[in-house]
Length: 124
Image (cartoon, rainbow, N blue to C red; front, side):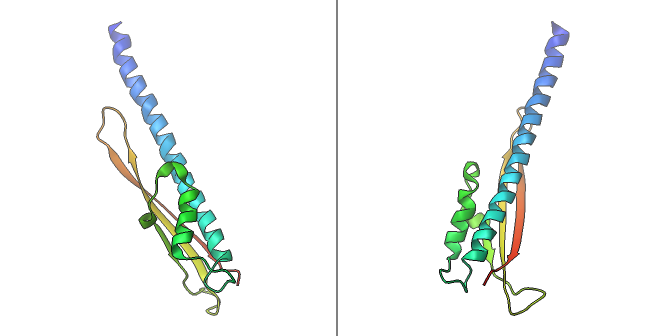
């Protein structure tokens, strides 16, 4: 029983650590997906479109695609720089920088910064 108790503690800590890392990878995937969807919205509703969207609307699209992360608008940056190939056109760039708190029982909490940038050429 003593050996089982020692091994069980290590095993369950390892199991919880694996589950926590899986949650972190899922959160990163969600951040990437939210950035892609927000930039898709931004290229259709860019500054030169018929119905341009505000930065706040594009940020809200990114937040709505990541409902479980409780992101804030300050974590989403939207810009429209000139295209590197054709200076007459603009790109839409959405960058999300989200802080994820990794908590494994028995260890000090660690903060991971999950960053994703998506860039596309505006359609107008």
